[in-house]
Length: 319
Image (cartoon, rainbow, N blue to C red; front, side, top):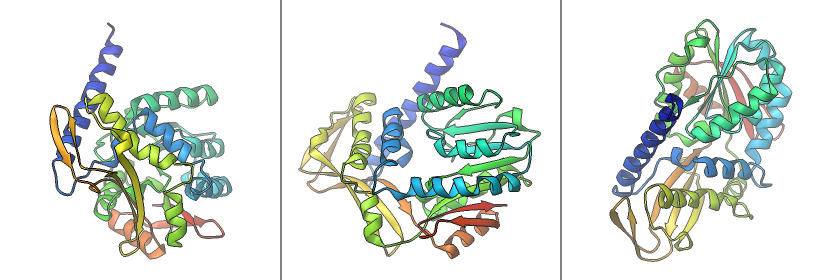
């Protein structure tokens, strides 16, 4: 077996062990919760891409429209020869709008927790942008301490789209921004996508699409535990649940037990009462004052903000 294959197997084993520890700790806690990052295995990432295509889910198409309109402005603010560092790159669809506007880019560094999904994205980008240096980083951007040395001489521009900042609690969001500021360095900047506060009914519909894709995404976490942790979840005995908590300005997402039952995970047994929920994700929503305060606490200032006409979403350039 060659060295690269050994490295891949070691990385997969480490990822699985991280998953096992987090799941056992999360199911053993009260209230129960599993970190949202584990929703994004290869199937979960593909399901999230499908969520973005649902008619109720406005964030992706709205942010894409904003980026299409402001990509040139972003390129001018970023300057020539910079390195674009994307946190949680996914399929990099929105990134292509920036790549098209930045032909003199030094390098593109996509960061994603799903190694398989990341490798596919990097391969496609290399094929479509043969002039572009692509240096993917597989890992958790909340724990990342360094970026590839190949970009050391370039100005670093972070890209955190999709309102993924909303999946972090306010405290976590500040910690992320402070870590990003260190990695991007004093002359760097961050392009931040933020979902704005709006009609609660519109928010509810966005996370409870009629086609049930978001439900599949949530329950895929159970499927992943069955596959990777020798669990025996009956997916038909659990349901997706999402609602907007207006008091704290966030969507809350859970999987809920439909009956009293006991499930085995990695050799441990866990009892679930009927109606018991396991938290998987938050999605915080912001207004202008929230964004400004978040940036300030994270060590940034807002250079420019772009929104759509209906003010559903915002893209901010933070220095």
